[in-house]
Image (tube, rainbow, N blue to C red; front, side, top):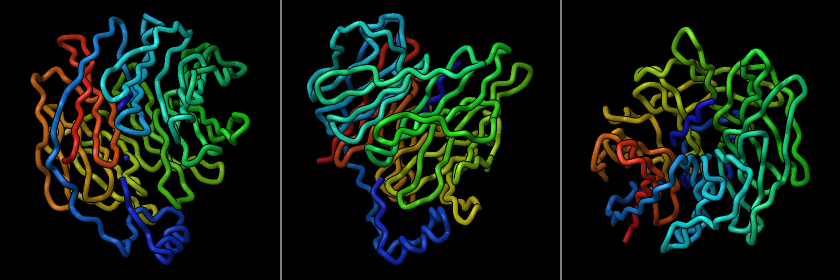
Length: 349
């Protein structure tokens, strides 16, 4: 099963706007009393490289510019987890029977990894240890693609289970601070790849894909609430249909084709047009500080216009994941022509 990674923002609500937001269940486009200033663009850019044979790092997360983690599956089991201390990227060299696909945390002492074979690992600030291994009856395998939460006792892991007929069914698990429990939802014949929720929102959003042998894959966005799953968009992988979403501060922004949308009262509302060279991924700090992953580099939307910030050295570089901090941004990329990982760092003065 291939892993789709594409591409986080401060957005404050007053008390009254928050109450209105909850009343509408997930009104992402509620106008706040506080309007953020356009995001700055005066970054100093540097680049690190990591060459790991047989491994492509898939996910990045960090608590600070001096505490960054990147993970991915590979042939060398001692090189699936890398850490950046502000100076150097390195693996601890420990062999782990682990093929990680996603990483997320709340603090430097509470970090989670989801992986193939139904595995979930945890870092307590000192060492990594397996937290659980999950399997389902009547399925030959289970793989987690993403892990995310809004507090230490409210985590979700999504992925797929595979049956003997090579069909995939999306799976959703919840962690309550003690144990992981499967959430029973309507069966969807796809792999769930990503889960996020806007702050103060009663609904979660899940990104998934149905792989079709005889035709194009179908990419879907689901809305999950009250143990019910609803498909709110489906499209192919074409430039004008591909969907995606990302949590931008307190909000969720949706990519559909060549446009970015807010989702308000069960309707998509166009926010801005993407860069023509888009890779359909976005990240950021707030609605006026949004980074756009391009096929040729990195661009920025400041609430009114888009400007290129960084250009790749060749056309074979692709951004896989992003980490946005207060004054620093990290873009995890891979150069397919040179078979090396590139971590592009931007720092605001």
